[in-house]
Image 1 (cartoon, rainbow, N blue to C red):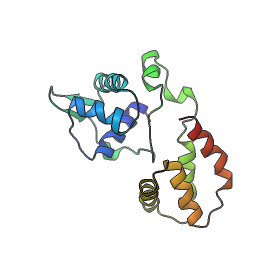
Image 2 (cartoon, rainbow, N blue to C red):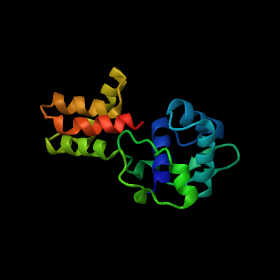
Image 3 (cartoon, one colour):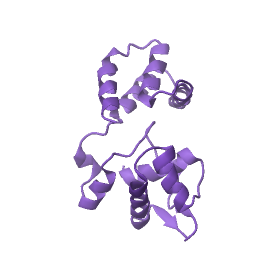
Length: 164
């Protein structure tokens, strides 16, 4: 999936809105979500509009697609070089596996032990918020709470977190 589409879908789903102002987009992406610096958030917005993923009517920004039909990985955060990749024409897939692979694996593990994906996500988000920890840590805690040996994931989660 195109990382720009994922970024737009994740933003609007997190905000819980389908319309924002340009300033709200830039400030939310940079300050609330801490995805990037404000100037980079502005560049992301410009790129999303130019690629046709967002519509700008002069006052409001709206997604040009159904954000709820897009499967956004749990805890999605755009790659730090998303703007550079698009400028140079490099596809995300060519840049190597995404850091969110470990989170996807944790979710698959939860489903394989009989947990419903939606329930797992809700629980992980609640743990993340309550304990103020990264999403991967919350997922590990939920798996451990459900009797899963998480030792095989610890080093990979540590690597993902240390790269942030």
